[in-house]
Length: 404
Image (cartoon, rainbow, N blue to C red):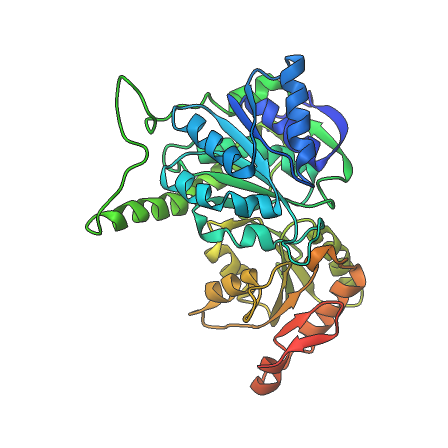
């Protein structure tokens, strides 16, 4: 372990932690447009550029679509780019997300998870980012401010790897993480510089080596480009694990790669989570364990690339599992639940799964709510298929389920 304890401890919000991580990553261009609850990120970065602690070109653009366009322009000439958004702003960027991933531009973007209108809401759920899973971006969901800072640095290391060259979206739960203050360790610049090399890519516009960055294809070769994107995303799995391992060696903090487990080794009932609600779920697990119930939590850190093998290995031995989605694909089920179910298909033992839909529009999810989820998993009918299907998808704090 090379960790030398030279870190500075600061009391900051999740938004500010991201801004500190961006500064340590030395971006060349920041394209900024404010939207609640992301605004603090770009405000702090503007102050850093103004006071000289961050040497970068700060571009205050007129919309989120322009923010993504400016980041793409910077990346396409070999500059390290950063932007941030939230909710409707992310949707306004949607066209650009596909351009950026198709052009293999390793932009890093912070998204403050916030519900989508209508009804209008500034509070957090995962419907914004989950709707962009097919845009070709790597997606990570962090649990706290420390992970937000560390993942911002790791994000550039992952996205800019020559075998990846894929943009990366860091998701923070709106208000719960973005505006909550925590004690965060800030690593020294020289150690970050040793971990994150200067950005270099052959995939850029250049007078010395001209190439087109915005081309068309025919049906004869379009699929080959899409295959290359898919392969790069799949290859990023090992890059993510290696980036985390090396980060731990230098800075003393590891997030276990694609997933993070708590009390799952001998768990009979496992709840799958993403983001900040995981901390609440751990408290509930401890409570259930004190009652003799073998509960565990599996936190999915990366939704893309999806940790298929890790999820399968963790859940295969459980009696039943639940997925807590802060998202719903209307007319079916939660997006994370769909992905987890797919990962389990084809295994010898497929445990019964319940999809808990909760936290939409920022509704609170308490320890008691999660204890009730574990009770539901414990009582999940193993043999009565009709009864199981009847209550497979349940809305937390509403007392209703979707009957098929």
